[in-house]
Image (cartoon, rainbow, N blue to C red; front, side):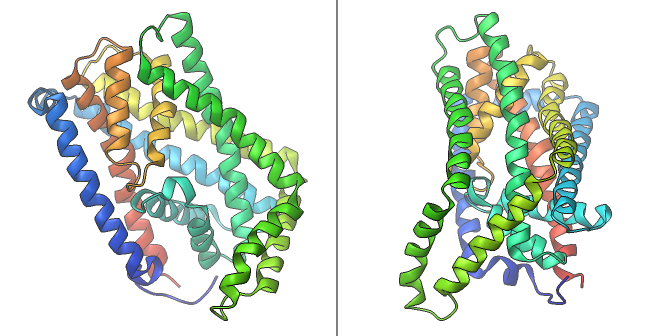
Length: 344
């Protein structure tokens, strides 16, 4: 582990902090518009009557889900010859989750930053860290699509897609991702020379501007990255263990939605939740921190179009779910980020 310490401003960078602040302001403005559109008074009434026990269980499920994903991360790191104690690594994972959730577009491209946090907090170099993070993320995609497939099958069998443009569109997006992501991974693995050429074509002009970026350095990083991935891929049994923890993590990630439903006694079943959670996650790709406002809007739209819930009840469920899964994760991750930043 490195001995460097610093403030969160040093870790994120001042420009990133400014973007984070602007992203949250925009998201809060969009949330206000959404609340006005769905009827905030009815939603507030539902929230006042929500069962706090189910809310607490939802928060607990979020924490356990992150811990399961942290364990999957540890297994992948160990395959890559990086042995970090779980009690230490899980704190790093919480801190990385915080970075993903508060950074605009963090969900769409937070791997490089997470790899930086990991390399800063362990003995791993950046390329090893990035390879492990990418591998763990790819493993997480399998349960993501599997749970979505179960939920989609339930909707098809129950005629849940009739007339629902929102559900149809998100189902198509899930299907496109299920095909497109593996295809992109396969292409990136089998045409490494092409990937290297593209990256170096981008780096070469930058190397003429700053001495901090060099073509040789970028080429070496790419080669070390692929070598790390090859070393991880050579241990399929350990990857299956990591995949098992990924499945547990995803189920625990979806469960807070069901607890939110139970808290306000909304007519939404668990199988429906297994479609709604992955589908709404796609909205997290918008350029607001953690998909704030977009995810809530998607949740309300899906709940109203697919179930017998009113706008107010759907808004209450969406609010509780995001409090349990997003806000609570930010609180835990923020504490972990401060700890990771200042510990030596």
